[in-house]
Image (cartoon, rainbow, N blue to C red; front, side):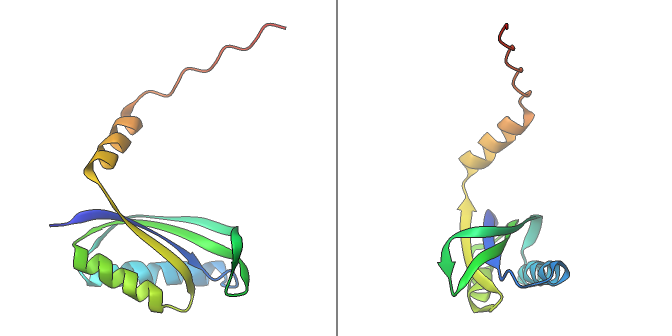
Length: 119
């Protein structure tokens, strides 16, 4: 049975933007070759890390949502651990309640703007 997952990983900051795009595309392709389906890839760009990791102070953040079985997700996590351009990765399985709440929030109208105080 396919579950929905989200993986956030940090790429080395010294990669050019084109190289970072190639790495994230290769990671997505490896998941597809194991039977997974990529739903969304969001590149958040280079950000400062909370603490130094392997003598690096910044990282390129990438968030990928995908659907796959547990074996493909575990294999992706293993491959991310072996990839020397990936500093750190966090893979989570999204539960059905969170997905439903996300859909409801997306369909809800935006909140009304607050009235401006009189001056």
